[in-house]
Length: 292
Image (cartoon, rainbow, N blue to C red; front, side, top):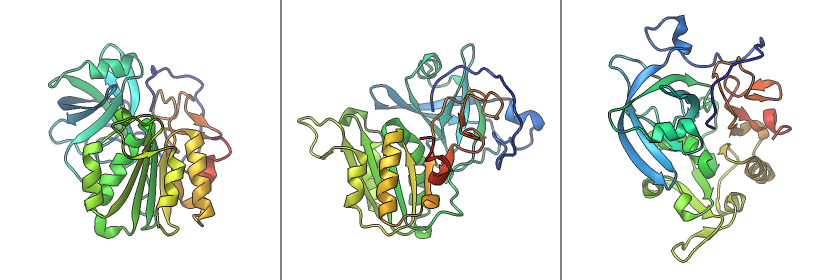
C-alpha cells in the first residue's frame, strides 16, 4: 500500500460485495471512520528502509481480520495512509510492515515504542480462505511480500488444513529481502520456499533472476494461488500457472493502489469498475487481468 494523503472527492454509489472497513465490536455506526489508538510495543528492522512494527490495541476491543486485509494508519498531525496487515489472526499481536515512502510513513517510523498511532479498519476483503483450494502457490515481489506473510503464517498455524504449499519471493537485492529469519520455520512446517534477487553479490549464494522463473522449481498440483507485487510479475506468474492448469478464478491477486479513504468514497483506488478498498484489495485474476 502506498503512502498518500487522505482526500475525498467524487462520491459514487456502487453495489459492492464488501462494506469497506469493518466496525469495531461495541462501537457505533461511525466505527468505519473513527480510528482506534494503538500503542507501539516493538519495532524491528526488516531492510534499510523497512520496519516491522507491533501494536497493542485498547483492552476489550475485538479486532478481527483476515490475511490480505489492510488498515488505515494515522499519524496525528500528518494524516493517514493504507498499510497491509502483516501479522496473522492466529497469533496475538497486530503487526504492520512500514516501508519509507512519504511523509506519513516517515512519521510512523520516526515514532518510538510507547507512542500511539491511529488505526482504522480492518478494511477490504482479504483472501477467501473458505474458497481457496488446499494446494496453494504464494508469489510475492518486493514490498508486496509483506501482505503475503499474513497468509503464510496463517497456513503454518493451520497446517493440517492445507496440502502442498510453495512460496516464491523476490526482491531487488539480498538487503531488500523481508522476514529472512522466518524462512527456516516455514520450511520446517512443510512449505517449499524459493527466494531470488534481481542483483546478486558476493554474499548471495541463492537464485538470481525474476520471481516467475521460480515457479518451474515447484512440483505443485493445480490449486489456488496468492500473488502480490508489480503488475508485470503478476501477469508473468499467472501465465505460468494457467499453463500448469490453474484456473484464472483460482488465482488471487492483492492489488496495491493509492487508497485515501478506505470506504469507497474518494475514487482514488478505482480499478476498472471496482474499488480496491472495498471490492479488493484481493481480486481473482480474471477480474483484473485486463487492467493490470
